[in-house]
Image 1 (cartoon, rainbow, N blue to C red):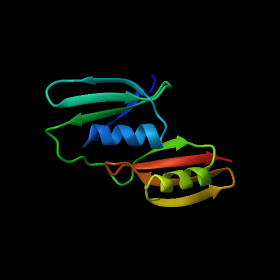
Image 2: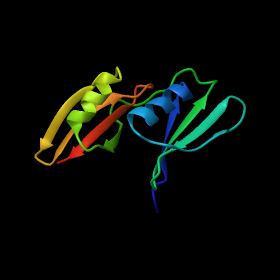
Image 3: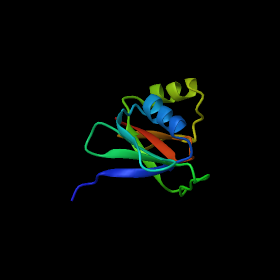
Image 4: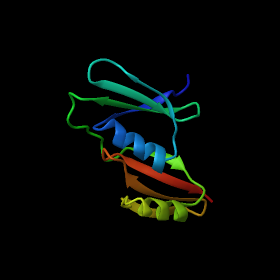
Length: 120
């Protein structure tokens, strides 16, 4: 069995696409309408994708506070400077639980925690 994607319900497709493309660095793999008022976009170039679904009938989305998506970066310090430059607040961190890993969190436009991690 292989893991295919994580599905995220989003309030605003354009705002979410901008975040995942400009901040996280994911490219749109495919994007399409899936019925009246529903749009789906898959992002990423690897085996596992991030799926965004925007349903105009849903006004709110709900993520648990204990879930996050993690993305590897070359430098936590450089990524922290980049997100601050883009006007995105650091949610928490940086943390270094051991000598080999350093990470911090931001929130995506829907309130989901996004972790940027550096393997040292």
